[in-house]
Image (cartoon, rainbow, N blue to C red; front, top):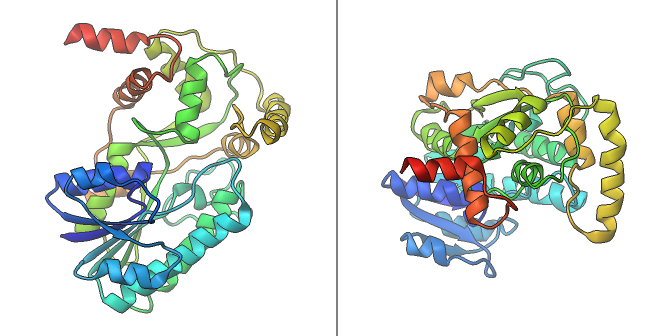
Length: 336
């Protein structure tokens, strides 16, 4: 496989590049002129300077490639400009699909998100779920629109396979999932509230991309989700592994004023709130996605949740992001 990866300088894209290199693929990354690429170059990755908002630069970068992994995206549940987010997701995806159509690649793996499936409250999302008709975040709205753009190109001949990761966590994550773990273990989360989250470990998410290129069916979606759990239970497990007391549990409506107040303060400080309003809405509504189809059809297996959390917590400690040494880090060192 000779693959072009968009978004290869980011958390998910960078991990995908490493997974592809490890599988023996020849990898090229589309990176903006200002992006730092030394780490990728040290892996033997070829860098093509360009931008997903400039279609001709994607076409040039695709020359000689048989597979496109379109993983470039803006992601957060706080602080993103809605117009910029929508343009990046939809126009960037349209440009990538047009470039793939022009060049004539054999596979396109598009990174969507399970958050844009839009299951109704109390429902578990599958690849066949019909969207509820309203959005819980600007990110969900933009990615839903981008996915519609991508699938419109299947009829035009683009060999598209779509992967829909749940909330991705793991070493290197500094986005909403990672910030939650850091804030929780540093004692900055005053309480937990009932709600559901779907998670996938970073290595599983990237392996799912590679397997989708190898085994996925054109025109199909594959949810990547290894864990569906209550926020209270996930929080308690993280605290247990780190050797910390878990915060108390409060009814979900009591967390809403905290989220709104945190948003207001963050507009002044420009620092992410401990609990953003969109994170609150998503969790209180319930984010539950079934990742079993990726196991059955792609052959994807999922990392044990405790193992995934332990690796993640240890990485945060090694990066100096935690105030106290986690118990799981000490135990892992003694085991060695």
